[in-house]
Length: 467
Image (cartoon, rainbow, N blue to C red; front, side, top):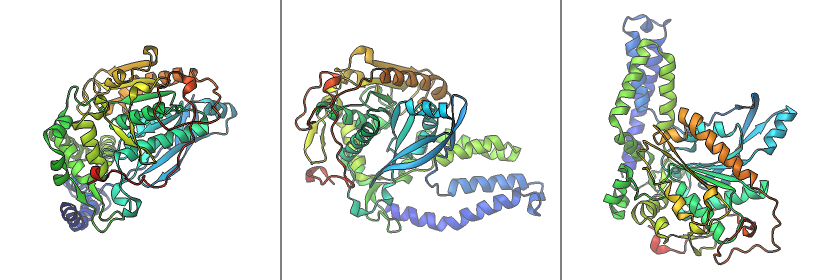
């Protein structure tokens, strides 16, 4: 019911928001009668702020059209490689007519960036993608807004997330021979599960996996996010934050955790900072500081654009990651594409190098939560493990902004290159098996397994676990 009320309110407010936008333009135009008034700049600023506080924020575009590779401009063609009901595997193909540059592009490592499905769109990682493109072939998981997915596409579970990641890894392995995986925030857990399951089956695993600011072990240095999940029961979340999508969307009737509620939670974590930011925007408009005002717009165009999450996925993530800690307790079972449960065993990973990255001031994934992956991945030798704590960095600083560019990216780049240097031609066995989990003891035993394609989530064999 709350979702319907919110949509009704948004519809009612829409004409006023449009009026505020028009009024802001009118009073900022020096050629209009209103624009010549002594208070015109202040009135325009007030209407601009009103418009931005009331407008509906759609999914932003990545907007990456060119990057520089060794000082040479390279064009970027963005396209969808795999289109699944709840996610697109998006590729940023680099194009150049300079022969030496083209040869360099072809020789560079391929990286799968697994973006968070925790409120914001994958475009939040725009800065991550832009810098990775300088030295890598880049793919990213672009998660869909659940309210746009029709009911006939089925539900989306945490198990489906893990299976999606495995399918994308197999796709890149089939195309390039192997790949590297970077997970940012929430997907560190399902990515570790995906690679663990592949290792347990004896499949070829990625050369490296880089995990940045994620809740591998949410018991360590608990934050406000962790405490909320611990202090509220599963039933509380189901009864208070889960609603059905209204009839004016393609996913009408789907049970979701609405984006507008997630956004309210984001703002509630630092209300004073957001209030000050909006007031500074108002003052910048009055002063005519266009650069600062535009920086504010760009940030909040991204920050305020949120998506709905399927209720099954959200509730299972709360339970698995933040309440029962199944990954660290070794009790997490994931349903594969055949509907059979498989135990997640990070200790079976042996040929994939591991790097973890944490921000010193991260208030979402606390200190030690991501580094806990090293203890779980006992099968990876110490020389193939690295950990980086970024001084002065908050959660977003480890994958976006100055610290990402100057501190994190150079070390991630070096880590991937080191992993790439270990790549050796391997002869695939006559038959690749993926039945019972087996211990992987060497890189040679990580044989390639043909990927399994499915356009819809697997049929559920766990009625008791579905809501």
